[in-house]
Length: 343
Image 1: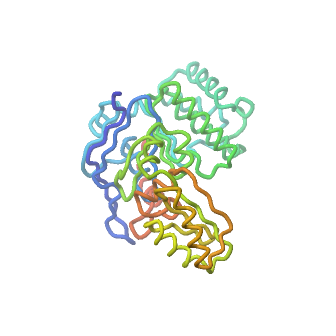
Image 2: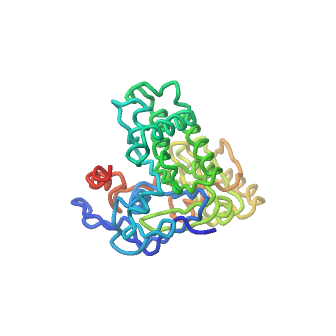
Image 3: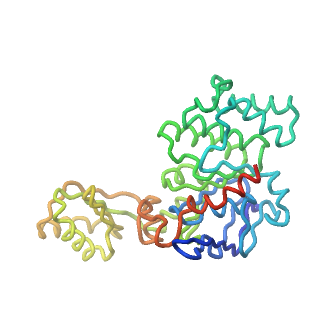
């Protein structure tokens, strides 16, 4: 398929009082095929938002080249802006205006006539189930409604490529599923979507292909099934009754399975890849011999969490910004002037 996004050797650095010069992107390579939904998976500080802002012409890379449908994001920025839509981490809608007024205003900013902007607003309000709330001020909307309105706004100009930067952060489960359904519909209609997320389940549910980012680099890419298959056949989860036995259990798993198990001290659960399910009986015997009381044991297929653990050496939920530099959110504060200027 033709490339909707083609990024080659892109680097971006930021100055930080706390961390000094921080590399947000480190010679990043990324390709997104036209008509697909590509997920960028990674922790805070991995560089997900930074690459979206570069592709959206909000930031300039320090080196490398980024193209959207063949247009250079620096040399042809105005062309890029005419074919993309962007939904950021926080809903960019005016709380004092009604939902309808927000959409009409955005339509006019894109050059639509009043009649055209109104018609497009009505179409989007119906599609995103906001008709009943259309003439209420947005400040009265729930978080899920704001997010749906923000997504509708990003589709006003019928973009060929839609950037969704952690679109469901902070939403309740019901609202999250609503957004998932809407994104899936866009994908089926042929819109190319680049989705950044910290939610492994979200990437697994929605993405055709996934790239895992860590410390500004793509460390692995492929379909969700391919990535899971590469991790290994099965994983074993062992839940203990007594947390004082965690160290003994960890050593037993390490010695028998030949890998370092991941330990969750709060749930008293250990999990690790197991190359042969027949090893499970031996493992349980050895745990019993060591005096470890097991509350529950289960074999399961690999998940994207296991993929992240395998390629980064740590679980996704514990991988965050900090010693390696500021998070994308922290960097974003430095870019507010740029965003405001574009709006």
